[in-house]
Image (cartoon, rainbow, N blue to C red; front, side):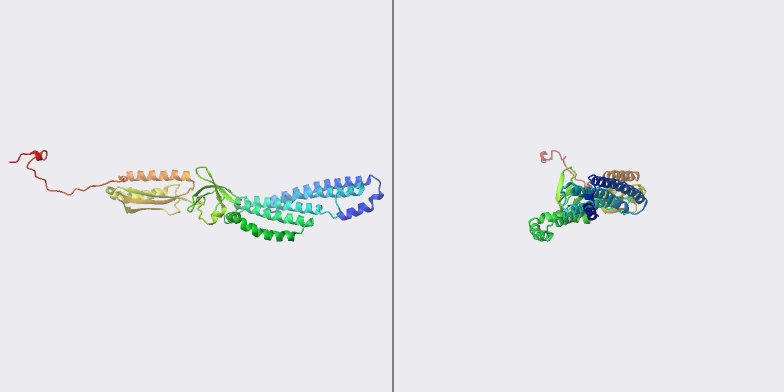
Length: 378
């Protein structure tokens, strides 16, 4: 199209009067306005139809390529106007073999793909669009990685378009990559450690994690490519290199399904006759408690003879995983246990010591014990 326009301008316009090129310029502007309006109307209708369908990606594609398409219309009009000005005003702006138009076209296409990636990231984390929405942290990390790869490819294509040999750059990059790899192995270890976190997803931003191998415990605030920032419970930031997580065990309490109540309660040995009734009452109370998950393991049993008490244990799970609410429920359960023990006429044991004295025959004394050493001999 552009070559044909150049041929028409060269062959026919010089024979016209001086205002012919101005008329053609206005016509190009009018055509660009009409094309812009028609494109906007068509895109609006297509977007309306796409919102009614159940397809996930039709509206994402339209949103991604709509604005670059409108920009391309005006850019094409501007390029044709430049060609007209060059032909009739003797102004040399672009050479015939200039790589700039091709480079701009490549950039516009890349812009469209970047917008498409943004749309994909938004859809993948939306619960109303996806049956199983992905983790926003993982989606964001993979999106940044894809953008980085796409950016490198675009730069190499543009450089080749301007006449630079990318084969030499690739060869230099291979040799330089080996040297950089040895010099920055810790940085690369942290990079791949971050990639492992994004792919395996042992935790995400907002999770409470801790490690039995290291003194690491707190809430994850940010997962970067080199380090992860954790806010400890005393509100201090803790920066952990990502490579550390490849060599330690990480516990994620945020993903627990229930919280466990595991307590021992002791009653006095004098109340051994009431022990069976106490255990039955405690178990009935737990089964009827609205905050106890009866689908999980629930055990109330006499377990051991303690030094000063008969000990039974309570093993059950709450429905909530909220730490504050869990302790409120646990308090209510323990208070109910105390009430059940009292209702059965028993008492909770406390450390006691019983001393048994063996019976001795009465000690006969001829003289009073007090002052015996002062008694006079007979």
